[in-house]
Amino acid sequence: MKNLPVFLMGCGGVGRQLLQHIVSCRSLHAKQGVHLRVVGVCDSKSLVVVADVLIAELDDSFLLEVCRVKSNGSSLQTLANSGVCQVFSGPEVIGKVIDIGLLGKSTGLAFVDCSASAETIGVLNQVVDFGCCVVLANKKPLTVPMEDYDKLVSRPRRLRHESTVGAGLPVIASLNRIISSGDPVYRIIGSLSGTLGYVMSEVEYGRPFSQVVNAAKSLGYTEPDPRDDLGGMDVARKALILARLLGRRLNLDNMKIESLYPEEMGPDVMPLLDQKIEDRIKQASANGNVLRYVCLIDDARCEVGIQEVSKDSALGRLRGSDNVVEIYSRCYEKQPLVIQGAGAGNDTTAAGVLADILDIQDLFP
Image 1 (cartoon, one colour):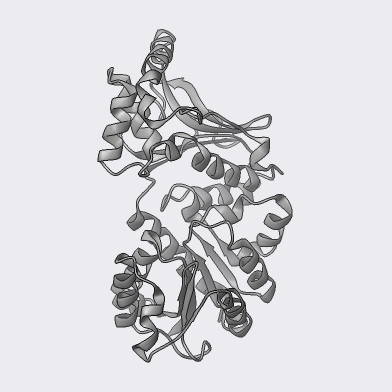
Image 2 (image 1 turned 60 degrees about the vertical axis):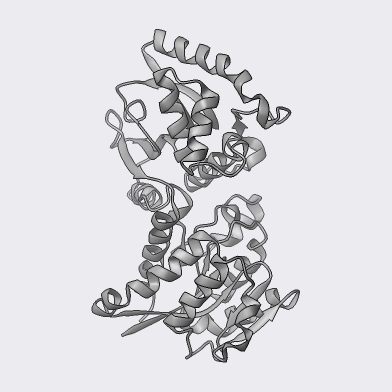
């Protein structure tokens, strides 16, 4: 049985779902000859870790208790009296996490970042230097300035980040295979936001933009304040990750990002945007096209915003909250490689993270 030690950073929806996946897949993984040994879990304020990172693990009942505690909004410190782990909090957490990386480097320890924080990049770069593996659902470490990015990706065989773009869809893996084969990619266009994909496909039917946004919120597609989704920054981060894979040395401030919601407008004046969006839809329809909020990457551009696309293309046929990506290369020149499916949700994202963790096992005897 091959034992893979895992340290989880982030106990939000994706992190908790990952722990539940690990527990529920025990029998499957045993048949595959693999055991995931979770040695610690941390959030932004607290850390729970086994006494001996080299041999011990947090058992399944404890992992499920972590999920319950965090689902209730409680602190990991409430687990201090469990008797199965050490608990740390406050300023000492970062130092302890780095110590864990130093201790576990010889065992192939995987640091799994399921947080939504940009502050993890310092720890991740240190554990990469130690020789640990890194698995990311968090996009922000991959969209930091180039100097920090270069450090993080300096050992690409030990880095996995499929779930940063398209949740569990094989976008990163497919792109890496094309690049590794020597097939030059010259264009990527995709709808990488389930929220914005839903909004843009629904307004086609004549529903007011503000009404569709409210419907998306009621369906749970948006953040509590929908403006967080409509600003386009999440899509921009995904686009930057793809562009950097193609060798583009860009930062977020080099990109053109179209917001569907001007920052100066409050949430109660969204109906003022209805006519503007309706006019753009009519113009696209007159051209035989439809509107989609997309990322566009080619030799000259890396930008996100509303684009007209052919209604007969994969993007034009997109409905609901699916993601779709079209990749154009020498081999996929006339007919692009199209990747489509559910591109959001804690379950889908956590499944992609779990697959990335298991993919690392081939690096170790």
